[in-house]
Amino acid sequence: MDNPSGRASWRGQLTARGVVIGCIGCVVITASSAYTALKLGALPWPIVFAAIVSLFFLKLLGNASLNEANVTHTIMSAGAMVAGGLAFTIPGAWMLGYADEVGFAQMLVVALAGTGLGLVATAIIHRHFIVDANLEFPMGASAAQTLRATEAGGKTGRRLFASMGLAGVYAVLRDALGAVPSMLAALPIPGVSFGIYNSPMMLSVGFLVGGVAVAWWFAGALLANFGIVVAGSAAGLWAVDAAQGIVKSLGMGLMMGAGLAVVAKDIVPQLAGIVRGVRGASNGAGSDSDGAGATESLVTGNVRTDAGTFAVIVAAIVVLMCMGLGLPPVASIVVVLLAFVTTAMSAQSCGQTGIDPMEIFGLIVLLLVSAFAQVREMQLFFIAGVVAVACGLAGDVMNDFKAGSILGTDPRAQWLGQAIGGVLGAVVSAAVMMALVEAYGPDAFGLGKEFVSAQASVVATMVSGIPSVPAFVIGLAAGIALYWAGLPAMMLGLGVSLPFYMSFTAALGAALKWVIDRVRTARTANLPADERATRDADAQEAGVVIASGVLGGESIVGVIIAMVSVIAGLTA
Image (cartoon, rainbow, N blue to C red; front, side, top):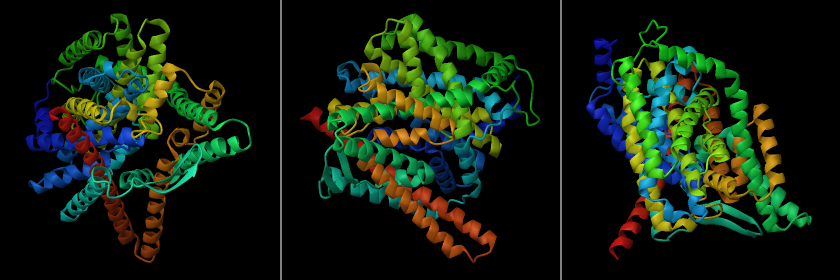
């Protein structure tokens, strides 16, 4: 039933100024994420960065609670994973020559359908994963701790805007004016794109991901480029062109295997509990001492009205997919049903590992639907896109719910904020994707091209045919085995798939972080424990702010250059 006091609470957390700040940040982060995902083949979670920025700007406008900042950063980061879902799937259609069949309208339908499904699913599974199972959701927990520890002031703002500005100027010098080269220390090694990518953004990705994950990423690059391509071709085992097909298939198999292992190891054993938890929430059973019980409404204030609202949204999505994407009604219904399953999988994966293999879930649904339904090859990318967007948004929502649970934020305010940011992000991400393909052309997307689009290349390969089936099978088995052993198989597969210069540059970024951490540790070794902890926290925050600012500055300039190019072409 309605809870007036609860309403007052969420209305005090979802504020007008927070919505404005969140929406402005959402536009910037979504555009940046679309560009980053396409350009680098990787997309770091933006949640911690959004949390710091939200608290900073709210404090500029006066007093701000951590709950208001929590809701504001929920809006701000919502579009990032929507952009990721599109970027990790749809460019595969461009690679196969379907650019004329994928316009802004189709991408917007994919993004809106996935966003709607992600929102409905997370409203249903919220209680199970956050309250009953109480999963870790490391990125959400990190955002909550960041908000608690951060007293964002002038120093934070100067760091943020200075790093964004410097990276933006550097990108203009390199991309618009040609004053600096895009590649450094390049060597003519057959079949290997050796060099250092002259991109502060790529360094920042390595800095933010850091540690063991990047080490495995770089190990994959060494295996693929110097193990298979260079050593294999030198030994006469295969030609360079054949070696590149083996590498592509191996990388795809590793990433697919890791995704399947996530399902088998982390999700399938929990399915019974997930079903029981969701069923309990839908039946309104149980309650919590803090009032956030199963009877809680996240939308209208009334659980029954919520159920009707969700039914209408789902029906509208089915109609939208039929009319906007040309999918058969039965196929659309199956995609919707499987999307609910995969969003639960996504939530489980993010809750336990912090990884959201959204494109892998899209591939799984794509393969299942293509096995029984008469669907055109082009439409398979739409299916994968809808599921990837839904799973990406679900991962972001559940991380935000976890941060809110730690901070005591009303989940209703968060869900409504996520809806605002998700819909806005759908529009922005579709517009940015369209601007990029119009500016650079469909031939600019793919491994070894201007936009590597590694994950979309995997989807395209699965749709069109695998170059080396034995290498794919080996990668699939290795991906499953490595993940089962607790090793980051997904990062290994990413290293195998990406051009060497990108992996090398990311490794340099991670090495830079390692050096900075070692120097700081040596300088603070003799300080009292409390002071050492404070300095470490300040340094970690500064690193995140500066690296995120660099990443955002360069990617935003890239989007602006693309849009200027499109406008110039239209007016010419």
